[in-house]
Image (tube, rainbow, N blue to C red):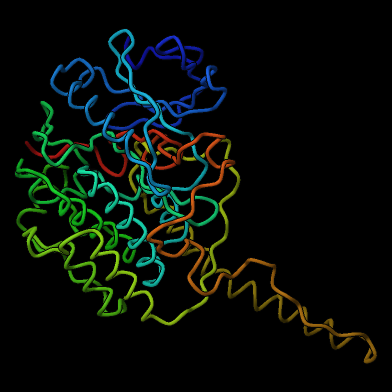
Length: 403
């Protein structure tokens, strides 16, 4: 039975009943599933047959699943179970409601520097917890960062993570990872370390501020090679110097020149955010979806929604002018004794202070039970690279770089 043959109602391992696919990526598919044993909804990530049948990869993946299951942190989506059924390897993770950073950026565009630094600090703190346990994520990208309804961020999709002491994991197609966020040492096939995740987080921060990735080419291989040879374009002058420093140092080619740890990057990002003025930032909540966006492989960022946004932005002043003219006419015709009042903006339409994405926390409070469907740990691994619990490797790009 292959991944393409999976259908709703399929039961993996005699336990997890697949309900519906929520994402597909370079590593496989993520399904929303029911676990009748514990009576909860879970996310099941099913690996591609080409990876599941590779004995070396399957063994390393199982080892990493065990390592990830030992991690316990509210900001990291955990692994519930690992198994193989009819030649298909799968991971089971919590199914968590939330919106990926990938989706947020596509919805609102570039983030204010203060908000971007708050996100970076939260991600870096989550990475530091994994690094202390000897785990390198190796696929940090917007699709693998879930923003929960309460504003806290969760790091998902450790599907290709590995222990610092382990051998590099590759496939027949090259290095495992997402080309747009690969550190130079990953592209070269060298040993990865916590600095590898710091580099990827720097790329994520660059994208949050500009809505563009620092390196673009006609193919994933071309993008990966640019990470090894080219310097990233400077950030816009509108980005404060202290924020630029946080981002550009993280993307240094030489791992020794990057932030010495994810914790150090978190502290620098937190300091940069605090030095910026608190400006209001309005974000309209996304429309309710049939199911949350998963954490496996999200489609590439597209420009069409933003072009439509610019068109509407041009029409808004015209509509506003017409509304003002109508209002003025109505006032002139109204009685001089008519009561007057001041309209009040809808509650929650503007968020001030630390922003709607939450503030960096070194020791965040444990996630609420409602968001994790009654599970004991935290999660959001979902499908594509953002959302419910299981993420696949794909998403913002394909998940392989050059060999």
